Length: 106
Image 1: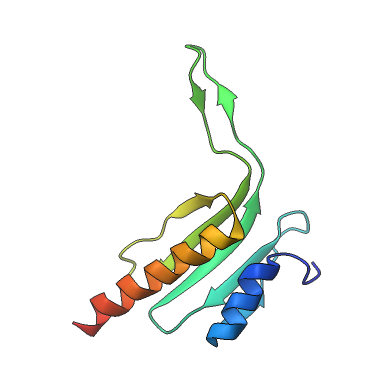
Image 2 (image 1 turned 120 degrees about the vertical axis):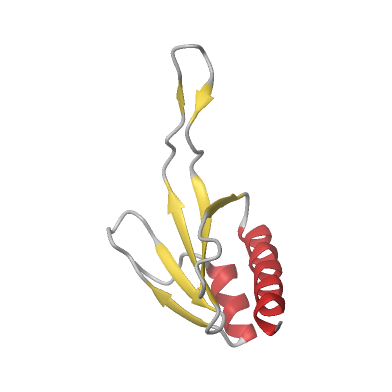
């Protein structure tokens, strides 16, 4: 995959001094890893929609788009969150880095 994906996230990470690496398991699913420090890193990836309508008429599944997965040193949390844009994803990652640094500083 070319470096044309996740341009805002890449620029932010480089400005902050974080390492950025491409990790594409399959060619159609772009993924980038941002390593903030030894306590936390993030995976940003583009996922396809898994939305469907259940038998009872409810909608289930996940929408298509950008997902951020956090990986923390102590495995405290490792979930994927849908993000509406790269700018919102950057704010989310900044908040998670702050929270994690505070927790490990104690």
